[in-house]
Amino acid sequence: MQEHTTHTLIISDLHLGSAGSSATKIHTLLEHMRFKRLLILGDLFDHANIKRLKKEDWQFLSQLAGIADNDIEVVWIKGNHDREFPHTLSQLQRVNITEEYVWNDGGKKYIAIHGDQFDKNIREKRANNMLAHAFSLTLSFLGLKNKLVMSTVGSFYAWLIGLSDSVALEAFEYGIKHDADYIMCGHTHIPVIKTHVHNQKELKYLNTGSWTQFGPTYITIDKDGPKLHSFRIKK
Image (tube, rainbow, N blue to C red):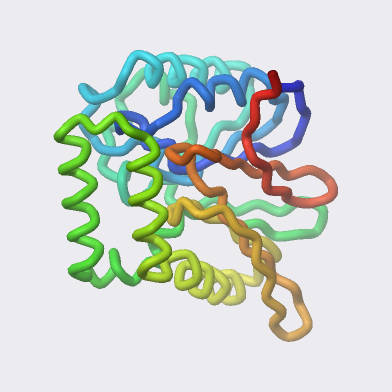
């Protein structure tokens, strides 16, 4: 992977501690990127039990601490999986932990939020979401290591209930309410860019995808605005 320079790097849904997490790939991405701000849009951890973290997860957390120590802004936006995670880890001492991050750049307003706030299945505690969560926990308990199965099940479930579209719709409503130009989320694990025009003003919704899939994705923001990328290692 060639070295790349950007102002803001955005990743989400790493799910450290799960069978499907790819901490080594994230470590490689951060090694080859130069940036001034790192945003993690939620679900950094899969659950609050730190005993489930693997060696490569701890290595990534140490890398994260080193980035923050170099006066690079690191922001962890909480998600539905890691909202209850304890903040006492030494690796997180210099990380800004919040529910939402808002900033202005180049005359444009950006909002970064995990996206579970826009998921009716979680908000209303619907049966299909609880069933999916129970199934996910069962796979994790059984120690399933097949990432293809984990990835396929997660993506199929999101498609089945129309999660990507419904989250995007509510994100647009939220962005319009707060007069944003860009709103960025994770949560659905489905990378996408959508545009909505309201009162002649364009609003873009971007989803970062996840790092539990075979095709992990991330967002960069430069003077030309945000771009969605696929992670690839060139041999």
